[in-house]
Length: 135
Image (cartoon, rainbow, N blue to C red; front, side):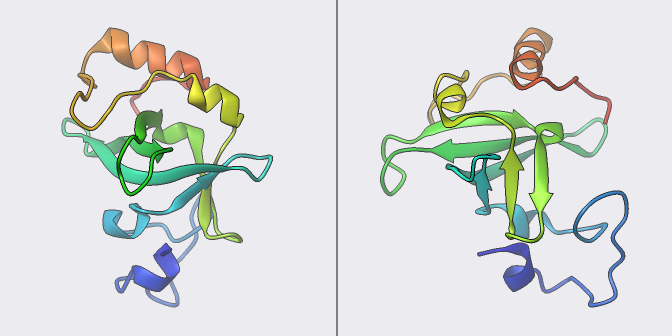
């Protein structure tokens, strides 16, 4: 499923502003989208979007990788700034190798990290080569 097939709020005349895709999209259209790296390897899919409630901005995409039917999957909080919407292939790209993602700080669905913790956020942004907000 992609934003083009699920987002009923998109208008054919939606402007593209500062990047690929329309200027505004519903979160539900992005959840479930595939994530690939620049080597065209499947890295998983977007499981959740995390909002900073102080700013109203998306700060992380939670990426699921591995497992089968949700069992044994590993979750990764990837800084939103590390993802690029690939409108041509209808997916996101993340500039990391599959091996680097496999060794990234991750968590399981029963043990989410405290994403408001500045030390945790600093480590995640450092790992993916992004800077922490404001966005």
